[in-house]
Length: 234
DNA sequence: GCATTAAGTATAA
DNA sequence: TTATACTTAATGC
Image (cartoon, rainbow, N blue to C red):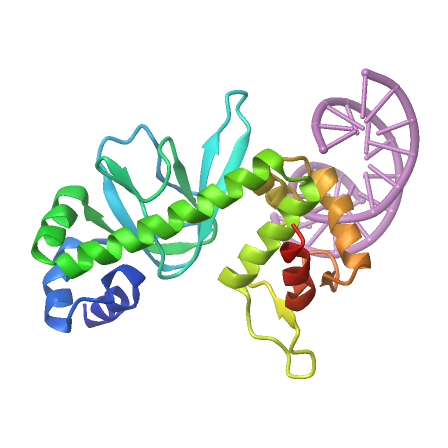
């Protein structure tokens, strides 16, 4: 129990709540362990909840008309997702699946709304998170519409770097390790292109010294400065 | 081993 | 760029 309260305080959304308030919230947020590949929420579920990722990673995706998956976002520990009433924290018709074995807490829509009424600070915080997410999606949409695969990949790597950039080695501080293992196929579903194109483009970026990889199924390393430079040119 | 998965390559549309 | 197909290497059972 205590452990879960601590976790709730780590969730970005609940930063503004006191310990006592978190204790109050605790019973309303059941915790669930989900295995990789498990569907957490789909558009067909009637019960709307807000989900909090305690551990692991969750992939949000939509299905295109011809059944292809388009990954919208990959969320890690501390992130929230879910549709809450008329305003959503992510686009509708969204599927959420556990991308790794994960631990998820959730709170009922109604309970969360009541909580926001009581705690204006929390509501403000929620708005901030939602609008940040919206901004990200808008930026990505623009690139998807007008950018080349190369531009999209560079941008995507930049975002992943900010989100999942791990510790860098002391001798090579400019190289950042991405703490997510993404296959070319997975990158492709995030960018809306095919795997082979990602393979080629990634090779291009490797030659230019923007990324490097030790081998198959090894993490990807990103040269932050060169990447930023490339983003700046877009 | 054998099947599966990820990645590299080639060629046509 | 994409679709399709074939090859290679690594991984798991």
